[in-house]
Length: 95
View (tube, rainbow, N blue to C red):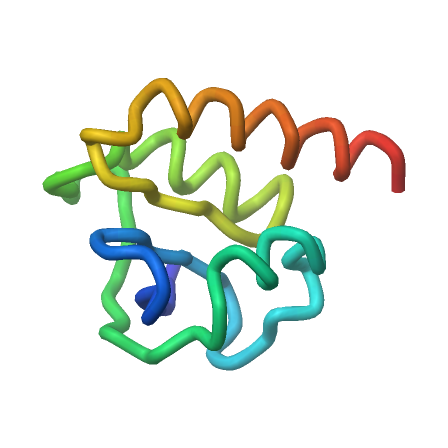
C-alpha cells in the first residue's frame, strides 16, 4: 500500500498518514483544526516488512484500512497522544 505523509506546521514532529494523496475527507474536523494545514512530506510503499522510526507498521496499516488515516504524535507527547487517540476514537464512534 502506498501511503502519503503530511506534517503539521503547527505542531512539531506531528504527522498525518493517509491512503489517498491530498484526500482529507476521512479526517475529523477537530483533528484538522489542531493539526493545521497539512504540508506534504513524502510518500512510500508501506508493507509489513517495512520498519517505521516512530510508529508501529502494523498499527499504521490497520488504522489506514479502518479509519483512512493515522496520526503520529511526538514521543514526548505520549500521554497526550493516548488522550487524543481516545478523543479521535470517540469522534469516529459518534459518526
